[in-house]
Image (cartoon, rainbow, N blue to C red; front, side, top):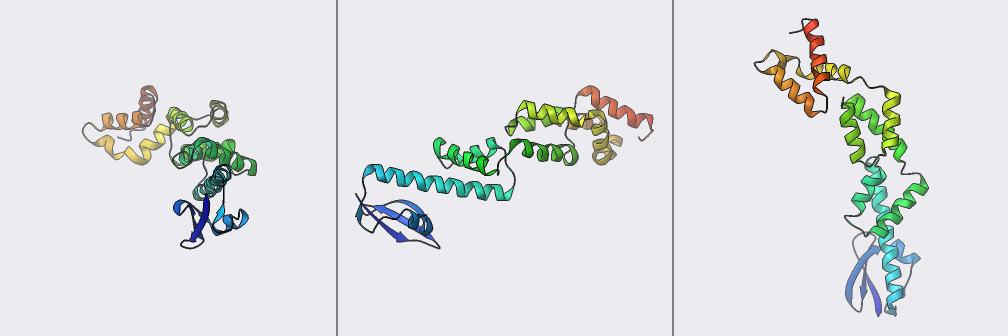
Length: 203
């Protein structure tokens, strides 16, 4: 097989085998893995080159995604698998772990703070969200134990900040109960929070 290449936009380089386009890489990468124009390359060499190119692209994608926001290992892997095979994705993930750019425990702390302080989520929803993002039960349990979340107090704060006016509307109480239930609060916690407003004669 004969390998050749053409310059693309920016630093892109399009690689051809026997005159047929096969893959795109960067000029910098190709300079480090150089093959002379129209030189012979066997199937094994070609597969190794493609593997290296794919890995370099996966690493670049990791950097791009992580520069936008922190990710859990699961989140990043799922995004990589949309573009790369499992072996390439896992290899790139392992490099990010080795470099310290991925750390589920540190990510979980940031996410937990966001869910509790900004989103005002119930303990149940926090568990669901952490699990969805691949955070281990052990890490989640530890964060919840140390935080000692007050579900009734959190529900009370949400009612006060978002739903206080709705309570005066016809059927408003039922709507508030439904809204808080969708956020993962238990019926008993919702009722307890509402009773606090009733005891304060807020409505």
